[in-house]
Image (cartoon, rainbow over all chains, first blue to last red):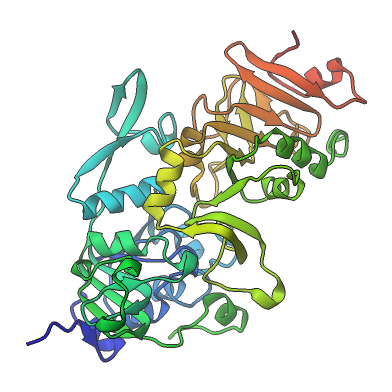
Length: 237
Length: 215
């Protein structure tokens, strides 16, 4: 028997997702956003989802489309405001979706710490602001720090550049962003890649996410470029 | 109507003053909007490394039409370039550069700044609240510069005794650069470092709610 984390289609990798799941979505804006996996999530019709991502989607592609289909109960993100955001804005203004605003670095560290088995940590970020209200404050060396708890998920949907059959991942430029730390923080990590590498061809020095953090991989060789698709008026489904 | 909005240094002139302040070899994070102008004015006698918090150290100028790559973007989500010697990293590493005190300077916009160095720049309390990396930058960067018009569009002071809007950080601002003045934040309050040549101090004080110290 050989280990093989490669699956034939987006539908195949999305088979375990359930109603009420907490799902991390990689990406910063459109860079590194797993658009085809999110469309696969829309196809599952799963609802009451909690989404952890940096943003809250644009247009009606990817996360913007998922929110537009009313499958999302709550968004945990750092920056939900965007000129091209339609679906989140509408639901938020009508009190039909919850928002937890988290400073970007705190969001990254809450995810990273979950993946490292650390349940919480103290940080100076947000001390003295509304985002620290109700949280424990502790003083170290005369400075105030706020307790932030780690952030886990049932699933992480990830976009990477390449994978081998072990799930060893490489990324492309700033499309790396949240993807490697989200791979570490979910019970099941599902990845779309542009191409598969034979393991004998992967350079161990170039692997950013070792395969232990990855469960399922499928190929989307020519992924949608979100901003171009939105400018062309494309929507999903 | 605001008679002061077109008075004073231009945005480019303010940007140049900030650029001149960075020592050779500094690691700098420039906020989205007006602070982005600063990179245009760095003297060629020194090398400055720009950090973009989405995971890019060694950021170059914006990408040309024919080299657009939507997987090489800045914190404002616009396609940019990377310079020789640049590197990519994931978000937790990128924010360790900020939160771990490795960034020498950050330049941010402001809605309000208090004489104690409090900054408000992330939400007016209306609409969708969105913070991004601002709260991390203000506590992590060694020097926090604010680049802003001296008053709001309707002429109200932005540099106050106390901020009225929700804070981004408490006692975090090092210095403010406006169209009318450069003010250091000191334990005693705002201290005048430089004033636009064609105004007098009484006018500057009139459009600044907090008291400005001159000696």
